[in-house]
Picture 1 (cartoon, one colour):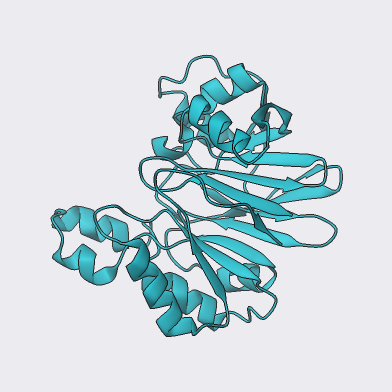
Picture 2 (cartoon, rainbow, N blue to C red):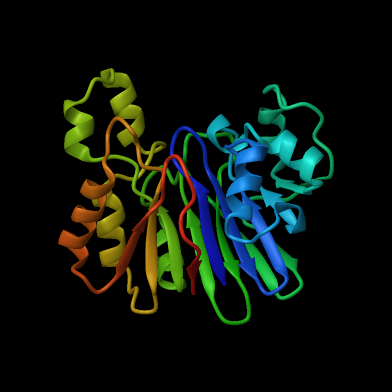
Amino acid sequence: MRVVSLQSGSNGNCFFVESGDVSLVFDAGISGKQAETRLAAHGREIRDAQGLFISHDHSDHTRGMGVFTRKFDLPIYITRRTLGAVSRQKLGQLDRVRLFAAGDSISFGGVTVHTVPTPHDSVDGVAFVVEDHESRVGILTDLGHVFEGLKEVLESLDAVVIESNYDSQMLANGPYSESLKQRISGVGGHLSNEDSANLLKAANTDRLKWACLCHLSEENNDPNRAREIHQQILGDDLTIHVADRYGSSDVFEV
């Protein structure tokens, strides 16, 4: 299985996962041109993907979904409540919608996408686990907090893209209002560097080949800081990547 982060941060999120002749896109928070160009640089064609999965209704995950389905002819996999919420955004005609319920699993030949409900402060958020005959990869972002069952999901994975949104000290000392700080660090917000690292340490992650930290805040985090905290807590046994806020990652394999 191969994974590419096409971009990740509050300015837009989009991930690509490929196994054999099946390829899938997760979230559409970037432009169609950006997605197409960045995948082409890796020798991939977005029009070949079998579907676009939407994790929740926030615009940094949805703003490109109308273009993705119309321009690239991608079916949109989305929950009914999230579809209702995004209908209030100016996304244009949404064609080829395929509804699922949070907790459902959807198969594409030998690849299955398992959806995991999250407590993030969206209408009906989900995270994803992509499974083929050999590996399981998690796309775990906008989680809210370390909720019951999340550790067990991690323990089932061979690789993970996991949010590490903010540094606790940077958020506390930063310019955000107190209410916004509480929202980010609260039960419906995001995982901090420490949350992510401690979760990875608490889980029995011997099978993990790598973790890619995603959704880093521009104002309240720093890639070097996020990596440093994970290495302090986890040691050097686990390979740590950091997703770019403005471009694509390498192709990560598992």
